[in-house]
Image 1 (cartoon, rainbow, N blue to C red):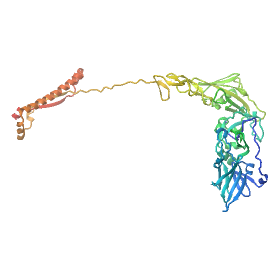
Image 2 (image 1 turned 60 degrees about the horizontal axis):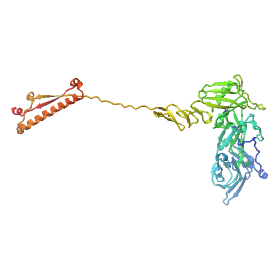
Image 3 (image 1 turned 180 degrees about the vertical axis):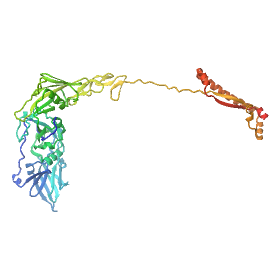
Image 4 (image 1 turned 30 degrees about the horizontal axis):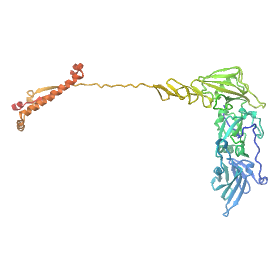
Length: 548
């Protein structure tokens, strides 16, 4: 590919010739004798007896000389300045493409007036006639440091072309043979680039002393001014157009930018230090004009078959998906083919030059008479996409939607992979399948339930009865008051208490034993070996108290 870009731009309607007209005619030759011009980085300084005014983006030569400047004195010693014959560069700018027409009411928004770098807002648009307008600047004390600059509302769209002679013409003010321009004999540009006229014109003016030159007013396609820029060295300062880098890189130098037609701008350029050029076109894709160049291959010598393979892979990234993938190449008398894992490419001759017919031949080029002219060869490619891919954007093979085994585009499947079903052009997960994080249909997992059983611990309690005869000696003696209280209690009440205590403890033991036996009869021996909690019950009878 090529990297440095434009040296010239040109707005030119598609026609059989490329033609640039001369400078604007003088309106008043007598008045012109009192005007001199000085070209600076800030613009064109117009020097006249009553005022020195700097104009930026209003043209050069007669564009500036024809401007009228008139003072109108005020009673307070100030004056108003009426400036006429200013060309409206925004008239019809890209009107055809955007469907928008610049209105006269907007002119003031794109005129910037300063005096000694201080902005002036006290001005108005006095009149607009035939693409020209006049300004009325009020209450000035002097013209010192006065500067008027025109800005542009929209970017300019530039169509790019190549002049095959490889030598910038010394005079572009003449007709050229259409066959000397490419691609496709001037029918379709290499590319359309967007040019910010405000920053672009500032850069070429400040760094190259190049100024926009308005020519004549054209009515075709809507009223607009024809203008152009021309220089030998503009290219080194305008190296930020990435679109041209994709095609020509460092070998391309534009030599003219101009606007003639109502559509896009036009840039013509040449190749530097490259004698041979191959243009690659693409066929068989509805998304792209078959006359649109998709890539170029330049060289200083005729390419052999092997060299052509290498340069095609390195330069034609619109059709090559992975530069590192090795293809299976073959050549015969009719074409060259390259088979990759997911697609294949077929390359055939296309109206200029010819491909090698065998592995030992080289590319043949059509050469022009001029010694510096490029030898030109044009070939066309078509692609065959493999299973699971389709010809998508930029006419290259792209992957089908997820779950599609085959498709006709990025939205319509014709066959589905396992686990999905074709419904209205979409591959939907079948019953028993679900989409994973990538959207791929996978088998739906079966849900399972796990029951956790808690272990049971059984404790047997043994109640040991200790008769009060065994602990008689340990019982404390009752006081006289206590003895009297005990005597008051009837024998029947004591017997009821004792009987109740015995029944409660016996019920506890029986219930616990019953529970243990019911839950697990087979582990009775193991249960009996568990820790035994001793509950000691003291049985005290009425007679015992009497004996004490």
